[in-house]
Length: 173
Image (cartoon, rainbow, N blue to C red; front, top):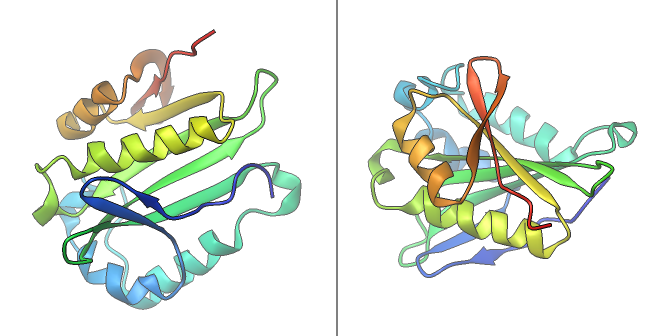
């Protein structure tokens, strides 16, 4: 495994809890909305399919991949309700580790700033743990995620990943 190990993160309104396989049963209904897949593709997973996915994520990549998969469940502090997740894939590069980040907040919880708050906590934690660069791939029509990327200080690049624009946090050199 490469890079930092996920730990519990706290913000004013949220707790980011490192992913565990048992979260699948709780997260399946939270993520069971076709609208979440409009820009990222796929479809909602059944609890069994989500459990199998979480098993793979928790196990992490094969050691020869030289990367780390970090995943957190996002919960509201006030009632412990799971509202989504954030994730980062950290890879080595010559100028220092780089993380590709993503965020997903369930439909009923969108529009309250949870994605920005959780993603900001993630990016802050990554940079505090030696990550030198941060990117995110965002579909240009996904206005909510474009807004989150901007609020994080990421800037769009000419690079693409599929039909998504790669956004990059400018390095403080």
